[in-house]
Length: 345
Image 1 (cartoon, rainbow, N blue to C red):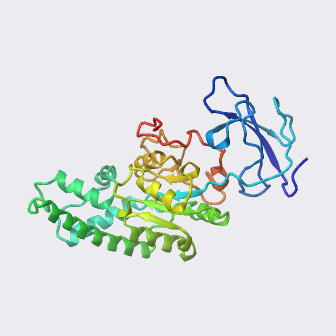
Image 2 (cartoon, rainbow, N blue to C red; image 1 turned 45 degrees about the vertical axis):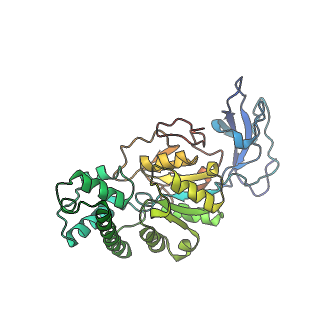
Image 3 (tube, helix red, strand yellow; image 1 turned 45 degrees about the horizontal axis):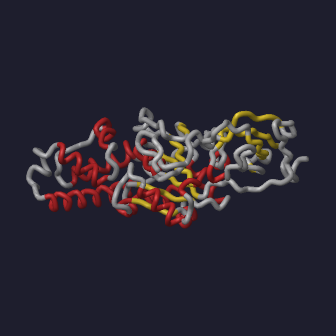
């Protein structure tokens, strides 16, 4: 019997992937989605028929789907009620390359203008900046580069490490001011689908936040200008030097989970780089990658899913309803992993 208010649905069989002495038979789960909506698959039953492992201890992979009302053996799913129990506890976004493709035509240009204004004889090419993105954080990026060319200015004449860092901090502040002028001028639009997915999450009361290695002031301005003041009121920003270590260290994502009061294993991260993906996975979170202009060829073997973009309405690659647990495309269990994808702990 079909649940009231649900005009169309499908019944899915999921396979339990909990390690066991013997293979578990398919878990039968009634999964419904109201017709014409992006609501999540609404899960009726989530306990394994053989090992009875609790939902928090298991992951699933969908093995088949049939029309509503079909008889699935070994057990039969009868839909008697619908409940939303499987939304992510938080949806966390990287900023640069995820919200806005800022690196090539935003940050790189702002760095070069800051160098020019302070008389520093360097200009980062598109190719060189791509190499420097291996280092997370703008101040850290400049320090690495200036040390690579230590026989050239500015470090050729500034030898004291403390004075070097004072100059780097001054450059970074100037660069941030330049970058924010670019943001306020609207020269860098949101990537496709970002506003749609953020608003879907807010509508369903799923907490949203930004976790970035960039300057907090710049990230907050991007959220305010690009997503609007109403979103800025509810979208927390964790950025810059709020943690002692930058990505791929998981500190920024661990902090976000603590501050939001959510379980890392029930968080979903949207990232665009392999260092960001490693940070998310090391924090024990799911991670979906939307590749950007610099990251399409990076190693995303530990990611759960990879797309060129989120996608606007009508050309969606995924929506909030796909980020449920179990979800449409999860391939890795939500456990902390190292840079090679090996489980930690």
